[in-house]
Amino acid sequence: MPDALVNWLFAAPAIPNDVGGKYVAGAYIVFVVLLLVYVAIMGMKLARIERGLRDVAEIAEQRKDGAAAASTVRAEVKS
Amino acid sequence: MYGKGLRPLSIATPVAFAITLSLVFFYAPIEADQGFLQKIFYLHVPLAIVSLVGFIVGGIFAILHLRRDDARYDAYSYVSIHISVIFAVGALITGSIWAKGSWGHWWVWNEPTLVSFLIVFLLYATYYPFRYAIEDRQRQARYASVFAITAGAFVPLNFMAVRLSASLVHPRVFATAEGGLPGSMMITFLCSIASMALLWTTLVKFELSAKSAQGQLKRLRRALDAPTGPPSSRIAPEVH
Image (cartoon, rainbow over all chains, first blue to last red; front, top):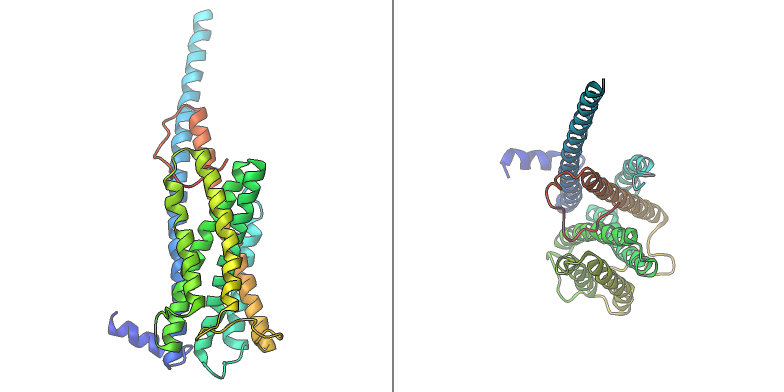
C-alpha cells in the first residue's frame, strides 16, 4: 500500500490511533468490500439479462415487421 | 413476483445500517477489557448468527421442496444457502481480524467455537460441487434438498455441542442469565442483528428476482424460437 494512503488512514480522526482502531477499520472495510464485490457480480448478471432482453425484443420486432409486410403483400394479391 | 417487497426492503436496510453504525460508534460504550477493538463484535457476531440461521432457513425451504414438490422452494433453499455462505465468509474474515487484534493470532485451532464454525462453513462449501456433480435438474434439486436438510439439522446440534464444551479464549454471547451485556450494548447488538437480518433478506430477494428475470428471459427465447444465448449456471435452479 502506498505510504500516503497508510498515513491518511492512520490520520483519520474517527479512528482511534491505537492497535484496536486498525483492526476495527479493517473488519468494517472487509464487510463493505464483500458487499461491493457481491453488488458488482450482480450488476454483471443484470447487464447480461438486459442484453438478452434487447436481443429478444429485436427478434420480436423483426418478426412483427415481417408479418406486417407479408399481410400487405397478401392484401395486394387479393385486390 | 420475487421482486415484491424488494423496494421497501432496499430502503429499510441502509436506514437500519445507518442507525446501527451510529449506535455502534456513538452510543455503545467502549468495553473495559478490549477497548475500541470490541466494536468488531457488532459486525462479526451478527454475521455469524445470521449466516447460521440462514443455513437453517435453507433447510426449512428444502423440507417444503420435498413435501410439496415445488421447484420454487429449491430456489429459495439454494439462494438462502448461497447468501449465508457469503455471510459466513464475512464472519470468518472479521473474526480472524478480531482474533489477531485480541489474541495476537489470526486463528486458534484448539478453540471449539472457531473450528466448529469453520466445519459448518466447509460443509456448506461442498453444496456447490455437490449440485454441480448431478446433471439431471430434478435429481439435483432433490439431492440438494436432502443435503440442505441434513446440514441444516447439523447447525443447531453443532451450536449446542460448542455451548456444552469448555471455551479456551472465545467469549460466549448470552452466556449468563442477563445476557452478559449491559443495556446499551445489548440494544446496539440487537439492532446489529436486525440490520444484518434485513440485509440477508434483501439480498435473498434481490438474488431471487435476478434469477426469476433470467428464467423469464429463457421462456421468452423459447416462445420465440430464438437462440438460447449463453448457457446459464448448471448448479443454480431455474426460477420462473
